[in-house]
Image (tube, rainbow, N blue to C red):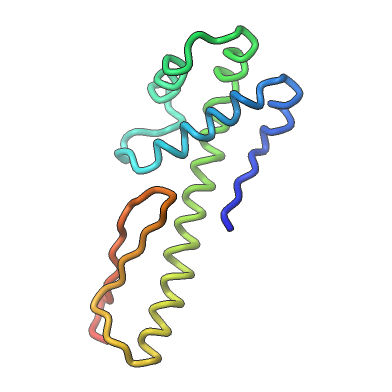
Length: 127
């Protein structure tokens, strides 16, 4: 449902760095849920990624250094859009059905196996 296709896939394939792209994508996705001050596209996060994957073949190191921030931003936007969809659409529609069928729910807990974060949705006014 939330399939991500990076716009850097062709570039990575052309430069024989598809494995580097995949590693960056998995790194960014696994960093989801960090402190708000930690930006996955930041120099510190990139340095951690680069250090974690040493030793680097030269062409793959160049690719990673050149494209890491842009890939991280693109992936971060996808993560954010996925969350917006889940919370603004699916949860709201579920809540409307609960109210329509006169079920009593003081709160709804939402999570996924993607990031294992528990989000609690409560009404802002009595139903």
